[in-house]
Length: 184
Length: 301
Image (tube, rainbow over all chains, first blue to last red; front, side, top):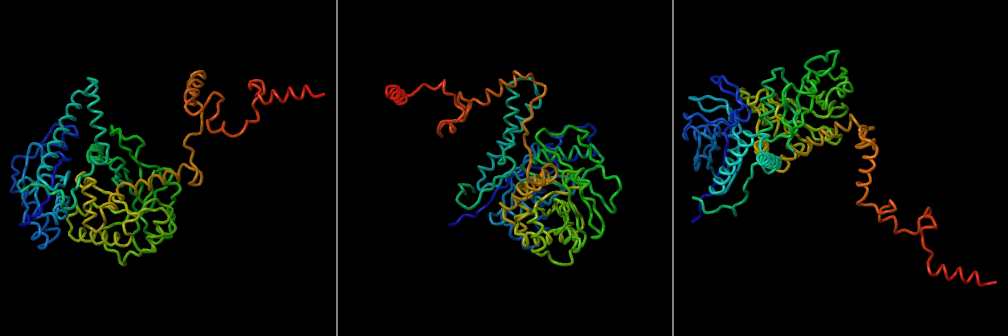
């Protein structure tokens, strides 16, 4: 029996533009990584992607993708989601995510979706999510005590060095089928 | 090193600061702020973009200044040498086939930026674009309008033009940039690479379009402006540090010279070849053979 091959996209929702309601000016880093409103449910995300694929690739695309499209994990507070899609057509889903500019109608907030990892197993995707959030905490700590303690300064430096490398900027993409582990 | 060479300049400082911060967050290292001259060039070509931006910029980001000129009429004079003094990059945006041909073949610009949202009457031809690429001019593909625009035909045209350009150039000399009117039009490098691979360009080539090709455009433009005939550039002219006392400078030189110089002040390689001419006799002890020879010469009547 052959398994159905999937890809797991780790996705960040970024909010570079402040919403109209907020009066105080946040630092840009905090604004970009601000949490998603609670009203956004997993169902909305799936619908948003399905509409996006339909708009870009038509009936063919949505037919190909809809077989295994699912949101496996979604956290509003860190604005992170793991999306499952068919392995052969993950590029379509990715392109549809790139084309998203606003959250769906009840919220209607401008958003930029960024794919940070394309993984063959859900375990690797989860590890990436954990690693990312650890890094954000490190950065926030460094931000808190910038120029205070030498140790924190070195942490800040190390985080900055991490970001400089190319691998950190580009999303790692698992190719081929050999890396498909024991998901499902 | 990821580049975004087309970020429109606006007077709204807050907007621009947000855009730059977002670009930094996404991992871009080199950003060019663009000022577009529409219509006739004004008599004063001074750039409206200040050399130092009115807000703190991320330390690892390099910000360049670039101008866009519309090529509406092939006969008019674009005063490109003057523009080159004011801006780090000069880009041309042809509006029809004649001006596109002129830009490819004779115009001294750094980048040809095409308006992808409208239909071109003829197909792009390789000989024309090939001359531009072989002259070191890059062709720019701006993706943001396809994402932000509400007009369906603009999106369609962008995709069709992009696939055509990719087919004709096979990814050589193409650079991807955003031309984002607002922050929301900017996408992360890997998202752009995926978009390009959906449009039919290989992932590696697409990555080159964000890293290698724009870098070569930037460096080529810099060499054109600073160096002698675009070939010879003085990286370090050997000037003496002015403010330091001479003793300290000497010391530093001695320390610096140490690793590859022996006591004679020569590199190890030099001492291998024969006896140097200028070496004095006194410090060299006379060899045994020479001593014997001398003795022999003395003894002989």
